[in-house]
Length: 347
Image 1 (tube, rainbow, N blue to C red):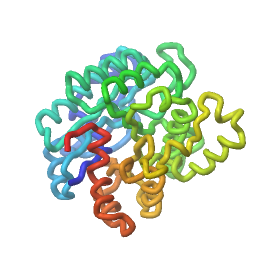
Image 2 (spheres, one colour):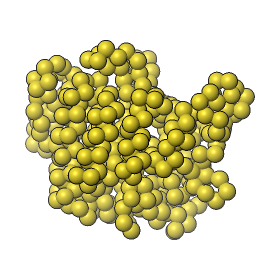
Image 3 (cartoon, rainbow, N blue to C red):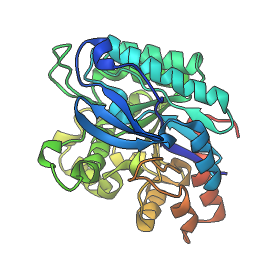
Image 4 (tube, rainbow, N blue to C red):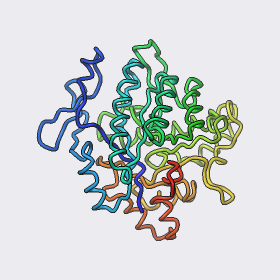
């Protein structure tokens, strides 16, 4: 059995959001040839996509070819739109969430889903999360690594995930038993990375590590101990700098331990107990995956492919299946068991 925790989907069509909401910056799809579309922001091409992004039949054909039992559907992170007016972001979120729920209802054995929620207004976000879990049957939400400044509200600050304003979201997620999948977007330092695809190669891992450190040092996991959180792309740069992060906690507690006195290492696997939070397996390297299993435990590492995008794993689960230092039981855990636990799916 294989459950792919990390896949992205869009509707085939939606209204011109710039016109609908009355200001620019939203994504639209331009279907320029059969089975292909461009994701456009104004006159700029953000990404070329094919019909496996929106067509569930095409997705299931590719799932069958790669022996994927189930995909966990979430939107493309550029659609978060945290910079937009809260009411407009909520309207867009509902449109995207209703679409995912429709796909899941039509194919409940092949798909389950995660919502998107308007984090620029935590109360609206918590309310939409509640609707999606209780009314739509989604398993939780995918959120970004931070909430950017919002020109439409006059807020000029960027909210990292330790910000107290986000507590209604964490509270709702814990109360609902909702899974939270954190995906990087709008990468840190992107203005210094105009070449070589560096925002995706350098910025994304940094964004994820920033989010993890913010939640650890900010005491989010202490305040919400039953919160189930997973981080995309193997936790980004965090696993490979965990020793540095722990060392800093000890030598500069005046800087690192201001909001939480708990050693960051204690959130990782120890004494036969798995880590406190989850990561997916998308690291493209056997040594890196071995380190993830060592740091987090097999119970906290889940197959994730980033389907259907080029930085993803073209054959989901291939790396896990190739690992010679994992037992058959551990491989089964990574391929399906961890996702089942994280999502609260019946086994």
